[in-house]
Amino acid sequence: MSTAAEFHADLFIGGQWRPAASGETADIPDPATRDLVGTAAVGGVADAAAALEAARDAFRGWSGTPVAERAALLHDAVRRIRAQLDEIARILTLEQGKPLADARKEIAFACDVIDYYAEEAKRVGGEWRPTRHANVRSLVVRQPVGVVVAIVPWNYPIDLLSWKIGPALAAGCTVVAKPASDTPLATAAVVRCFADAGLPAGALNLVIGPGSVVGDELVRNPISRLITITGSTETGRHVMRLAADHIKRLSLELGGQTPLIVLDDVDLEAVIPAAVRRSYSNMGQICIAVNRIFVADGVADDFITGFGDQARGLRLGHGLDADAEYGPLLNEATRQRSIDHVEDALAGGARLITGGQQPAGERYARGWFYEPTVLADVEPTMRVMREETFGPVAGIRRFGSLDEAISLANDSPYGLAAYVFGRDLERCLHVAERLEVGGVGVNVNDVTELAAPFGGWKESGFGRELGPEGLEHCYELKHIRIGLS
Ligand code: NAD
Image 1 (cartoon, rainbow, N blue to C red):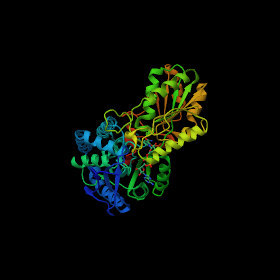
Image 2 (tube, rainbow, N blue to C red):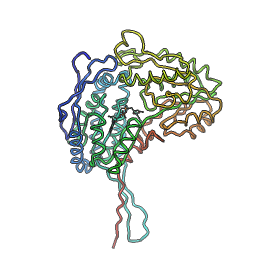
Image 3 (cartoon, rainbow, N blue to C red):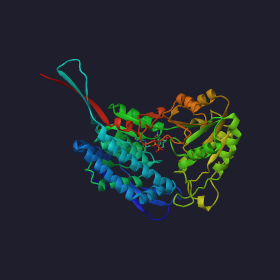
């Protein structure tokens, strides 16, 4: 790596910015150039435990603060994030690789999410229930669950942070947030906005460090009561096992292997750009990125030609370059996974329509770039159709009947999202009803909606974020039964 570090992220514990107890730091590279972007503290078990203790100590005060006051502080933090949106977006692009416009969009949505929960929490109340006896009353109340651990991946560091800390803080929980070690810099800038807004010490803490060390301690330590994590299914499995020791509440947003079904009456002009965007946006490093495309026989040739042409024309570059529509992958490991999946498909007889290599030219020589790749004639047994590539690779397969398309789509341990495109809305709805996933996009390439639940079925996890559902797991229910004289 070259050049001096422009940014540094420390830990934020009990209202204080501080280095890791060990003094250790790590370099954060720019995925488009491998140049040094910043450095970050590498926390350990003692730091994680200290953050949990700070959150525990702050819980009584924060949960007892009137919800309107909590909401006002959250809105103030959001105002500060919006005021610094350009700078935070630049940091996000530099550490994660996504184009600046996408980084701006991500942070703007995160602001909307926090604002939404600040208001939504004001509407949460209790209720009187009917009783079996004239002199008894039953009151059901909701109380914040306690210390929440928010574990975030590197693909959408700010969005996914907001989906977790927005509802938790609004509900009166205190939080220890852990970003992925690859992307702590923009997260630290966002946490600073909360601190500057005057959030009480310990209400929101930030610990950076390896998942296997810091993450394990945050999950294992008896202080935390809700673990909300977005990550791979493997990590989710591990967290679930650790959380079992203290029967902790969990919200698991895990991996996906998303199918897109193209019906024979489709509007090709609409579906092709939508499918291209959802396959390659963020270089396919999205849990709801399109991985498997199933196309009706009648439109398959035209779809494959059009999809290949558009994928071939996408402009890659450094996320800060004005002409870059798409950036690099995060690192060598993520690029290698794409390479492996493409090699596996080609060895099994798939047809390469475009891509399958690192783009040529000086602009791409040092970063982790990989061309948007289209594979046709893929088999359901190939890795690209079974595993989460988390890269810019889309496999296309034809189908004859609707039943065949639906069973191909459901033939996966994952169940996060799916898309179906066709002009006959009634038929699309029938397909949507039979898909084993938490969200279906009908003639639209995104299932994310601020006020609607987002989450998976099967090995994609459980628990829901966004919408009122994203707030529910932040509360414990309590029944208070009162005898009258
Ligand atoms: P990852 O599982 O490696 O890491 C996710 C987070 O978990 C990181 O902060 C990491 O440090 C932490 N972690 C790792 N090991 C841990 C442990 N032992 N204990 C506690 N925490 C630990 O995933 P990633 O590579 O950062 O992100 C990509 C994955 O996230 C993909 O599988 C993707 O599908 C998934 N994802 C899911 C959603 C969703 O909403 N379902 C959204 C985005 C990404």
